Image 1 (tube, rainbow, N blue to C red):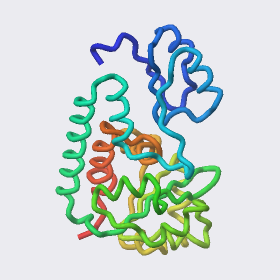
Image 2: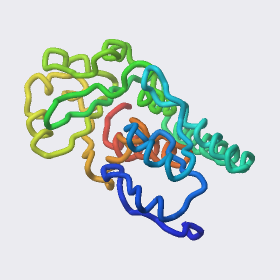
Image 3: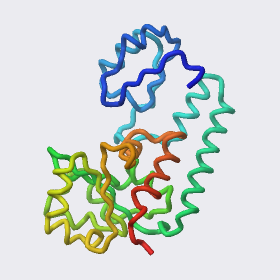
Image 4: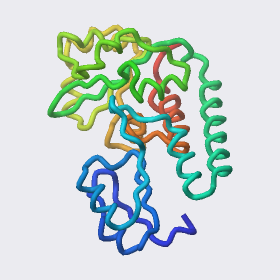
Length: 240
């Protein structure tokens, strides 16, 4: 960051600092995979050209390599962008090689929101499924069932089962209620010690890796997220 004049410490939960961006008088605004509201796009476009990802019909994230290469092309740093992608690919391969126990196993990742309940994260063809595939995990047959509707009702909790089950929580009360539920306790992955709980609000526990799998995969974040999943989330999961 030494060469960056201004660093805004806002998080993804904060509104876009349009005034601060305008004050920096940019020639280009890079907002790959970030702008959700048309109003934000219009306000930023009034300041400078905005580089975004192309809109995808099914709402999934484009391959993480493409944004990096697009930035390199626009900034006339194509060779440097390719080098960054190659380095990331090597890091990803190294994490997978260090964990052969994941190869061809299935993993379910879900999030349990306080207000809406359990949400299936690694749906078939989704970004999260693509992320864990980098670790060698095989597609989960049940993931096809949640492509259209990701909510997991109590009657469907058994479909969360896999060789590994990871659930992200955002407060202690939600986790305690879920883990005390007999229906949840009956899931084989939970009963047999192949379950991991992740605090989605705690960066030290790797909570930000949940966001990486949703919309934040990049040449910098993805190697970190995979290390976090393998060495933090799944550190105590009995697969062998």
